[in-house]
Image (cartoon, rainbow, N blue to C red; front, side):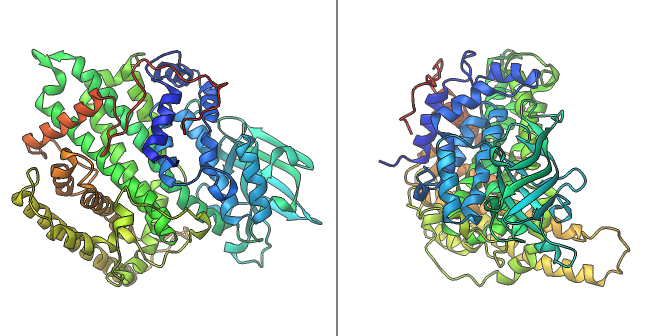
Length: 602
């Protein structure tokens, strides 16, 4: 029987045990200790592998457990809430998606079998020391030679550069007469199958966060590989790379959700036990509202993540826009929370003690990398900005359809087909396209005990403002383009010329996208997620924010702040994730499962 994504996540929770138990391989104390020593968390990685995490990156048609992309989201969230070093080290399995996108049938069967036997630790080797995110400028060479390729060059900085078994890389196969976009090809190199030459690791890089990760590089010196290591056609490398990044950017949201949960849980727990001014510190009104707002941001981030995962199944071709929107906004929601929670901790934030505050600091450092991974925030926003004219042109031309599969968390989904991801989605985005239908559905709602006519009226007004804001933002796209065209051209040595004003529109659209996602989740799940969710007070508070990830002291009505705070405390006390639905964590004091027993839980 197929398990829901929450059940799969709960199975991994039970497998890993309570992170507060120091003897567990993924414990908070152990993670801090290894982090201080810049040491790879091998025991934690082995525990995750023993569960069968790798199986969730192989499609069912190839014998794996990749049924729903939400499974990967939730499993990543479970691991990241304990130790980002483990989550980031093992989430490199996602790069095998490139074999399912660009590989032929024989390659897919071969790599699937290897992954399912636990024989793959891939790394993504795109970046080069002198070129950063400008992949088109890479100089790594892959010279064809009689049914083989000779690989030479260095890739740095990359995750798992030294400790990987397989390397996914871009190499130049074209010459000077080849168009720039067709000069590079993609290779999936099994390091044990290199015929001749050398493949060596480049030393690790000291990092601000992820101190236990193998952030290093890999160098090829005349390394000869069989032509079967190439994925796709010659010259197709950049396109395959971009298609893969659209998937992984979406999956990055699970890392943010995991770190965000632990940061809020750590601060909330510490302040509830601390007595100040004759009472618990968490009931100081300023603190109460800060925690309530942080909790609300996590709910919105989860809604955006869940809708994106469902969209990967239903609207796969549209992710050239969607992946960037989701990654930027979920990371922003959690990053802004981290700043507020740091301020709420006060002086304790600056103390490197081994208590819970040390865990908060580690999560803050580690979680900050999400906005850099798989295309930094500026790179994602630039990609969005370049596609805004197409989005503006397509706006309002979407056909009516049933949006239930996108938003109803109980609705069945078709299989995920990663090979359908397209570099250019022609300006389509299902979340924005669904807004008129969501407004109509809201208009037809009847008052209930927790959501009376007054609240419905407020929500209807807020959603109409969403429609007007979307229209205005997309109209600004044309205004900015006309403005930029009328300005005298300024001499610049850079080929990147995206107007900052257009990037500002992309930022505001990212915030708007998360609001629409939260609206859709609320409208289609009110009948089964409990009274707090159904009442919609949390949604009203989220829609009231100008930029959904930002909030200030005094923004929340005191009664709303208290109800959000109480809901957060209830989920904390019940040992549940901070979530719109019930998802339990490992029992307090639970020991991890023995690694020599194969997991049958998921």
